[in-house]
Amino acid sequence: MTGMSYLGRAVLAILMLSGLACAQTTTPEEAMRLEQQGKLQEATRAWEQVIAQNPHDAGAYASLGVLLARQQQYDRAVAAYRKALAIDSNLQGIELNLGLALFKTGQFAAAIPPLRAALSADPKNVQARTLLGMSDYGAKKFDDAVKQLSMVATVDPDNIELQRMLAQSCLFVKKYSCAEEAFRVILKQDPKSAAAHVLLAEALDGLEKPAEAIAEFQAAIDISPREPNVHFGLGFLHWKAHRYSDAKPEFDKELEIDPANVEALAYLGDAELKLGNTNRALSLLQKAVEKKKDMRMVYLDLGEIFLQRKQYPDAVSAFRRSIELDPSQPDAHYRLAQAYKAMGRTQEAQAELAKVQELRQQADNAAMRRSEKSE
Picture (tube, rainbow, N blue to C red):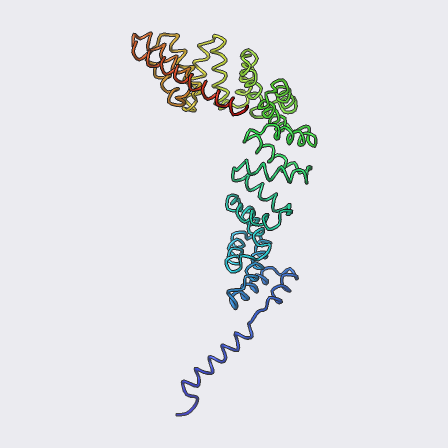
């Protein structure tokens, strides 16, 4: 037999492949040099080769994650960071990087745990606290957002976006003093912000400062007369104060700007009813209920109109729907009792009146308990 044997050729092939693999070995230093030269794609491939050579190198995964994040490949960066942490949970800085990458992709709830871990490791880290507060806001965890953002807002008072998130978070959890303070900071920097005036008005309303709230709504109107919801907000404050004649033109203006505003339709209908304009009230309320079928006040008002017109079955139907939407309110039960009484359904009327007494007693007891707790 001439030439090399089969076994010899196989050994030679293995040696050649081994030599080729050695020749292609990539070091972390080479990957970092490529990255420093701005050759990001080449550096990415280099880090991937480093990982292929040593799949348990947590630092290599972390470095790959940073590089991918620089290229805005956040999903891949997240995967790399998580792999790094799975190998070495004590790797410094990776929790923050992971949280940032998740935040960048809008995964706010998922970003919260790693950002909390990063802040726990370094409580003075303003970036971690800011990202955590913004992630809490994005995940609609407004109580937590207020806690974090109120701390960083003092460090960066000129950051209007940060102040806006803080102010809105305060509004959502009904911390109106906090909201007022933040909105005033915003308006100091941007006094022509109609939206900020509107939101400040909402905070002042929550603080039971109606005159100041009305002034803020008026300021918003002066700046931007067609700002969405600004006329509705002003009309609502007048409505709350039972100034229906003042509320009516504001609701009308809101509907000129946005004819599809269901709340403006509903409250304008209620104001017209309170002013004795039942024909227009009925038309508005029927339009509102066509657009939105879960507005308790609309059914209550419709029932009242039907009751006045002695359309008792329609009144009963409307009052029952109002009760379905909120069984705890005594007014619908009382009006339903009136409709039953007019129809001669005495027992049903008495049952509804008994329910009225029960609900009022429950409300009195709850108020008493709240009073005792506050003492």
